[in-house]
Image (cartoon, rainbow, N blue to C red; front, top):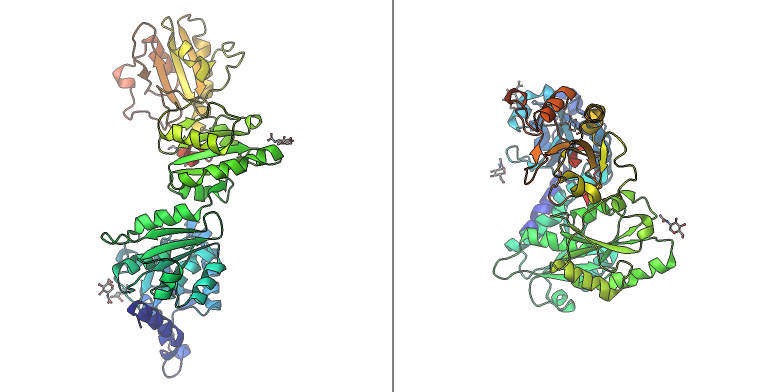
Length: 524
Ligand SMILES: *[C@@H]1O[C@H](CO)[C@@H](O)[C@H](O)[C@H]1NC(C)=O
Ligand SMILES: *[C@@H]1O[C@H](CO)[C@@H](O)[C@H](O)[C@H]1NC(C)=O
Ligand SMILES: *[C@@H]1O[C@H](CO)[C@@H](O)[C@H](O)[C@H]1NC(C)=O
Ligand SMILES: CC(=O)N[C@H]1CO[C@H](CO)[C@@H](O)[C@@H]1O
């Protein structure tokens, strides 16, 4: 038998008969409590004294280091118990255990635990080289991560019937065809299969299966019940199988050519590692809109892996996506293109036209650098200059900020940013105070809805001073955000005396989108 299978079987055998079953010795465990590891809800409760015992008895042991005060640990606890129950119900070899970190300083030191929860997987009682747990934190995910370590992560396929049964069982099935199952490429393949929990894996070295699927060389094939039906990843004969390349290939090809955006698909969309996204905004309740999907889909295949095609229903709960692109629902049907790295957004010249040809042409023009990105701007409010604090948007920004007769002090803010809200009354008071100064304008601009090519804003609030006069440089305000200091800055012509300057640039605390619960910028 092949050695990797042998070791898997060995694990199963060890677990099944269980050294545990033999260990109590005369009198049983009750008379020798020091030999027994206490349990709570099916989880072994370990201490410095009992870890060694647990490692001896359980060839596959996942240990959670937790702290009683840790909120993430509390959230994990019910899932952890459920995972233990799932595994117990299958009589799986793997066991779950926990260690109260703060009460077991020897153990946290031994395993270099610096945060809670930390999970480590111990195999074959090896205390010195546990594997870091990198899997999901819900019950089924934890159980599956362990199943793929104690059981085979892939199904060994011997004949056509077995292969077909596996392919038929799931929407996406990945089969590795390798002539030599001892090679390094197979080890790479198996390592990937251990962690790609949402895919099903098979493996074969059978010549009749190579033949049946039209293969002559080592190849990983992704079978799917949609779109192209199959995608091949030939193993590079010289360089071998690269786990990262294969992982990217599987991610790309396991996705539908066209993905509908919703809360379930968005992690896949943003996790797909495809830099360009093309979005079709439609109102799904309208038949003429739905008919556009055919052309959109038809255009997608040549862009697989380069551009991700996404449909956004303007009728569903997607207002944050519309907002991010500066769109109103009435503008559907329409296309937008975004590069995730630069976050530059593009729109086609003829927005209503969505055919296979127009979609392909639009993608080619953007990828070829022939389309200029667009910047978001709100409409100029009719009363933008009627209040002490003037309201700027993309469309009136240059006219106001670059007015050579005025000193213009602008607060760039985000509607969700708490520090912006906190300083709003001060900004109002400042505007009120300088209301009669003809040459001073105090203004604000919502930087989440208005983009400025020359002044990309990343933290909120950001305060910038545009001095009057020709060819003046824009000054970043770095002082305290109280009326007194702000006034001093204005009276001084855009300067603060040395002692008023904050040590930290941009202090105190500009917030970024990552800091907010509203994160369209991060997502899209
Ligand atoms: C912790 O366990 C180690 C190894 O079993 C042992 O050497 C050490 O004395 C124990 N420490 C305490 C405080 O029990
Ligand atoms: C534990 O695993 C490491 C790495 O695989 C190995 O080098 C070491 O010898 C193992 N220790 C024991 C006690 O098996
Ligand atoms: C979608 O179309 C329906 C039918 O015309 C309309 O009632 C609805 O308001 C539209 N949804 C949006 C968000 O515009
Ligand atoms: C939710 C969150 O992380 N808020 C943080 C935003 O940033 C400020 C300043 O750094 C923190 O104080 C908040 O806790």
